[in-house]
Structure formats: C-alpha cells, structure tokens
Image (cartoon, rainbow, N blue to C red; front, side, top):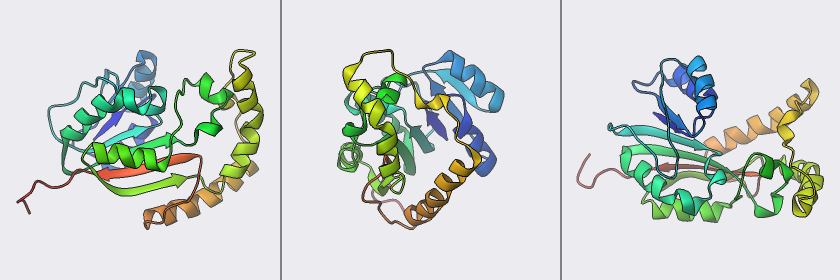
Length: 219
C-alpha cells in the first residue's frame, strides 16, 4: 500500500492499524511533513517525491491513496504521474482519490493551502477513463454539509477574488464538541450510503475508488 502525498502520516497510521499491510510506503514533497510521518508510522518506508513525477516501489501495489493532493498541482500537471501509478497497480488493485469540488467554492482557504484547482465528478470520471481504470465508487462527498460550507466560505470567496491581503486558512479554527458532533452524524450516514454504492448528487469533495482491470485471460 502506498500513500501518494502522505503529508504528516495520519492516513498511513490508519492503514497500518486497520489493514496491517505487508508493505506500507508513502511520499511527499515536504521533508518537514515526512519527519512527522516517520514519528507516527516508523514501520513505513517514506521518501521525498512528487505526484507529477513520482518515484514508486518496484513491487505491484494493491492500494494507492491520493487524498487532497492533486488539487495542489491540477489534474493535467499530475496526469503523467497518475499514469505511472496506475501502471504500478496490481491487477485488481485500487486507486482512491479525494479532491475538493466546484471551482465556485475556491476561497481564501484554498489559496492559503495552495489549492489551484477544484473539480467535479465528470472531470474525475474522465481521469479514471484516461488511466484505463474502472470506477468502483464515484461520488460527491459532504453533501449535507455543502450549504453550510458555502455560507461559511462566502467571505473567503469574496476575499480571494479581491486578493487584498495574504490568504488565511480555515484550519486555524478548531470546532467545538457540539459542532463536531453535528458535523459527524450526517457524515457517518453518508459514509454508509456511499459504501453501498449510493452516489451523492452534490458535495464539497469528489471521492473516487478506481480498480485496475484483471489481465485478460486470467482468473
């Protein structure tokens, strides 16, 4: 298993704890992030690399994650790297991608965290098709949260268009216990629906699981 853009290692820790893979690797463009990831997941193999030109293990991979990474480069810039990732998947292997949705939601927060592109389900479906993969799940995410997120982001959207001051990320604010509970409950229900194949008609993120087809003639 590989996390392509592993950041500080939270997803790697989750994979290690839940799935106990025989191989766990990750790369990121930030050495600072990798240093934190090494503390969280000392058993993982970690290295500096970039999704646009990734260094990959020689072994076929059963699972590759790329969560909120390609929004920093844009899909087209990262496409050649995605081709190499798809080719390294074992037959039946999975690529899981999560990306922020809708260009009209581009706000001050996006500029602060270096997001250059927000996308749509049709755009991600096109990417999967171009990679020769088969979509197993493809849906918007955070559907119930979208109206509230749009209202909360509106001042940041307007500031981003004016570019009057250095951008600020919304990550500096930690939600309270009640707010967290109110956000978590609909997300858990949505997770159950998406796991059963239900497609959300809208949302602030696009979530995709794509599978490499088995080699023709194999069982």
